Length: 164
Image 1 (spheres, rainbow, N blue to C red):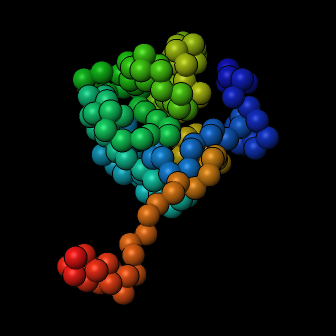
Image 2 (cartoon, rainbow, N blue to C red):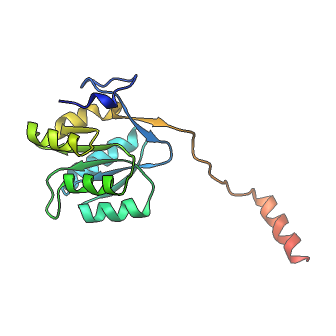
Image 3 (cartoon, rainbow, N blue to C red):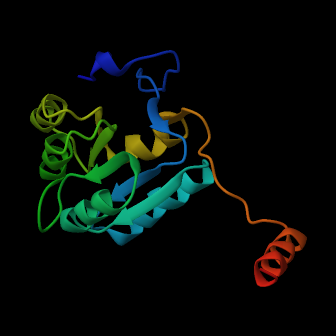
């Protein structure tokens, strides 16, 4: 059963709404399967998302601590820890970001555990790949980024500083 509390205006083929990702943040993809991790990262980048990748829960935690992450897409079954343990960490740190748990075969018990633990969605990997184009929607203003000063201005500023 999908969590209807996360439904809004934009609907996916799965009957759910697009999950909000703050513009300028990255989607963290966590999977020990290198091919799946790279495929998800490539597809998300093609859709305009910044992407960070991690091959394990400990690596994902390092990324969460070092970078501003707007959403997490995590495999359930990994060698060192499960995606549910990563979900627990995200909730313990009170990170208010969408968390999508993916797995090869989704049982009703795993889906219930994920949703009860605070995941926005729990999907089989095939369904996730099919829904990626509509899974996330950007929210918030574009991040402010400083642009380098034009060459003439930099040279003028360095000349002014040198003459003082």
